[in-house]
Structures are given as structure tokens and as C-alpha cells.
Image (tube, rainbow, N blue to C red; front, side, top):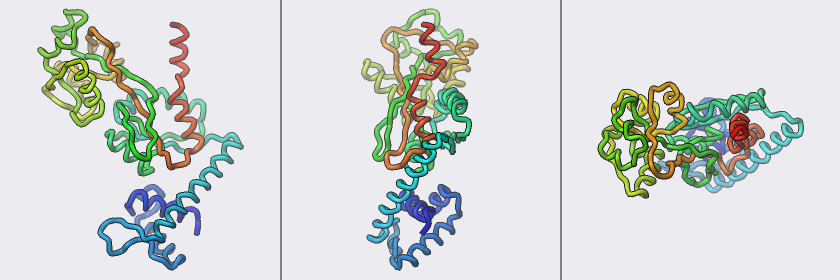
Length: 303
């Protein structure tokens, strides 16, 4: 049996899907079925329960899965050790991020990383938060980026940066005349917000509840960009990430309302898989995410 066969079988078991295993290994779904049949003929044992409506392994299949996982892990470690011995950092890093992070947070990190490691290729996909965790867990992505990260089984979830949520309104909004406001002043305003199932909305609601505040938004949106445009046309006031509105604030398209009390912090998290061997490129990228970027270090030095 070849290493690729062990990899295909491992991915089939972990994704419980012939099509997803095929996609991960750049082969057709029928090729996955043929490889499975070939392994069964070679070993002379069934690996899947053919009568079960759900995906289920036989005892022999479970044994082969555990062996496949170990074999691939050892093989990848060997490959990565060779690369590090030769001081070669190359390959492809597959990133998946919620749109607000992918659009506003990732580009400076990617630009600086590729400057230091030009042989690496980076692919970025945008998905909702729950899909980011699923993509990393299924092995479709190497690294995920989410806001208000939460622990997940089988995943390593760490905070790599903290952003702030600002109170944003359209220029000319009546509250601007008050100068520094109290958050309770927003009770008399139209509030627009992210959808209730989004982590940033849930995290914001928890923070506000801790301060004795609760608002009923007039409209909900499923992404930061649409919410930002709603505020631009004066559909309401919103809590928005500083990184997502920095350009509009500088251009005068939006206005930030200063308020009494501590800042509302929005933690940003990086997600990786605990059971997979990370390539040298992925290791370097994770390290780069957690370290201050050179531009940030220069700003701190000036201060």
C-alpha cells in the first residue's frame, strides 16, 4: 500500500464523506471508492459496515484508521524535518476566516509573511464562524480565524489579537452634538446590528448585559460589510470593529461616538487542529500571527 492510500482512507473516516475525501486528495469520488475496495481486497477484510445507513467502521476498519493516522503523521514529520534541515519554507497554507477578519485583519500579515517566505503560497476562503471551525476540524483548512473564539474539541483555539468595537454612526447624527455619550443614550436611537447567531453579536450582548444594558436592534445583518453600509446611509447606529471602519472614519464617511466607560474588546482567535502535524510554513505563519508586526512595533517605538 502507498502512503496516498493511507491518507485517502484517513480522510474518508474523519470526514465521513467520499466526496470530501476526494476533494482533499484532488481525486474523483469514484477513485476513493476504488482505493477503498482495493485495500479491502488486499487485506481480505471489510472496512466499512455495508448494511448501516450511517457511516460506520468495522473493527478492522478502526484498526486501519488508527494505523493510517499514525503512518501519515510520521511521514509528514519526516518530510517537514527534511525541509527544516534544508531551511526550505515552502508549500501552500490554506486559510479560512470570517469575512471581517479576512478582509481587514489578514492582508498585512499575509503581505509581511510572503515578503519573508516568498516560496509559500496562501489560499484564503471566507466563511461563517461555525464553518471556519468545521473546515479546520475536517482538514479542509490549515488555519482558521474567528472573532470571540470559543473552545472546540480536537482544535487548538488561541487569541492572537484584540480589536475594539466602536459606536459608529453616520456624519450629522444628533448624538454627535453631545460629545462623549453614555451607552444608555443609545436606547433612544435606532440600532442596527449583526445577526443574533453571530459570535461578535453574542459577545457584544454579553458585555452589554454585564453593564446592565440591552438593546433591541431594528435590523440584523449577516456580515460586517453590509452592516457598515447600513450605518453609512443612516439606517441606524451600530457597534462595529475598529479595523473594519478605520478607512471610512479617516475619509469622513462614518463617525465614531466616544462614550464613558471601558472599551468593548473584541478578541480575535486563530484555530488549528491538534491531531495534525503542522508544516514548517504553517508553524511560521502561526508564529507570525502571534508576534507584533514590524509596522506595529515601529508605531509603539515612536510612542
